[in-house]
Image (cartoon, rainbow, N blue to C red; front, top):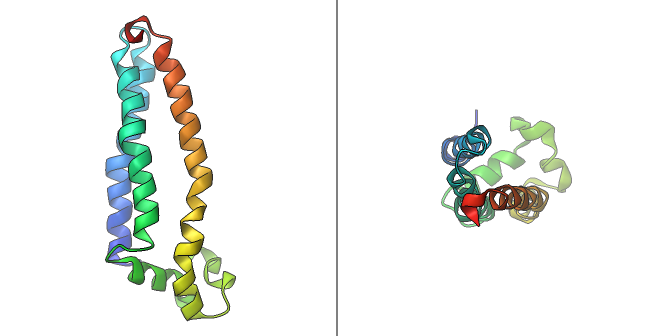
Length: 134
């Protein structure tokens, strides 16, 4: 089973980032042209909450958080077969793996961050095309 810290992290991300993101996008899209405020809310949510929280969660979770060691050890333990062993197979031994997880995980956020930034660009353009947001 997964460490408690990992489960709590996933819950936090799901309930305080993913679900509100879905709600903001749906609110902006389903509102249509009635008002510009849902579009503005979406941009603010992305810029002020989703992207900063994502960066902090990824960069701090695997490095200096109180549960980083527990999660890094879990990911490197071959008995857990985390993601079919793709993490521990990258390193020659268990200790190197535990020390190396942050070096692998933190840069892995960059592709997702690029997608999020592209989402901000799209949301910004969508917001700007409503007369209420001029």
